[in-house]
Amino acid sequence: MKVGDKVRIIHLKGEDNRYDGKEGVIEYIDSMGQLHGTWGGLAIIPEEDEFEWLK
Image 1 (cartoon, rainbow, N blue to C red):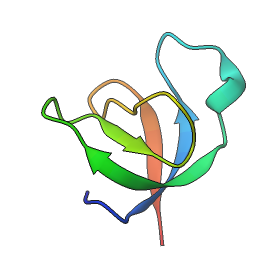
Image 2: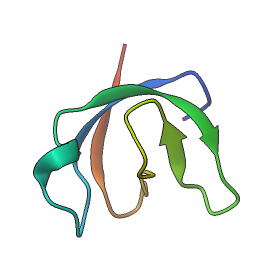
Image 3: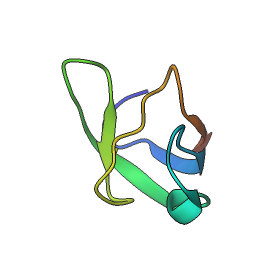
Image 4: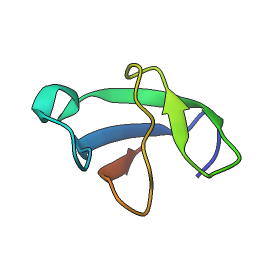
């Protein structure tokens, strides 16, 4: 995974379903490896959250 990759959120662990199905582009990856992008305010945690890469 790298900045510029497009992802679709399936489900963010511990959150309601408001982000489910959202797509976006990774804008930066923080020092903890969390993905931040155009889908909104929450980061994707790769080890915990369900998401997929889009081509």
